[in-house]
Length: 328
Image (cartoon, rainbow, N blue to C red; front, side):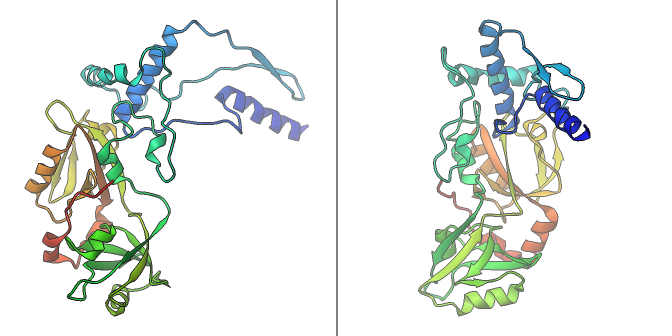
């Protein structure tokens, strides 16, 4: 009887929560503003349709028969419950996108069909858009990729690495170097060099392997920036996203800003803005990148304790870091 009761209890919970074991799907969004606009667009479509039939009572087999009415909670708690209530002006501003996002007679919130390797295509993005270039350039792809590079006429590949937590990471990519052209970026984790696994290697040992490698062909297995994360925000009417930084380190978050709504944290360093590396740039130069950025802006962050360790021995070399805009 106890076993039957446990199974029945699980069945009741599944009914109350409104999902089954084989069919549970939730939308993903680039930013909280996208989620808010999508939620409001869904509500508009729902309210414009005839009222749905009343829920059907269902009986659940149990030692004592239990009749439970199916209730479906909203997909998200209210923004007030989350402590993320949006000002009316912000909602009105972003709702201008609804007309384009939900044409009359069409269903809303249908993600684009994903193409192989494109994780962003499944996101619902009424404000950002599924083809937002900065978001695509900033994407941290899951999995491992293999790159092939060579050395220049001086016998250099334009790369410096740093050992941290038994892993080897890219600490420096020289501008216009073979490493840059091969697509290496600050914070990438190096897993193998010419088939040799470098887990547990020191900085010196990994550097010597690169130095001794044949200049014609160096094959490196890489995992995209595991210590970093990307956050997409929407600029306000003053062209701001809502945080204060000093020497590239985020120090303050503006209340009720897009930065606050989307979970920006202090004590993190700016690594990229819309995919463009800003490590080594002065605050004034970073500001220029932000000013030139479009309304939807994606930044890449790294915790300060990791950043400080990786960048520790780079010193003045930071000014020679590659700051070009990567291809999508």
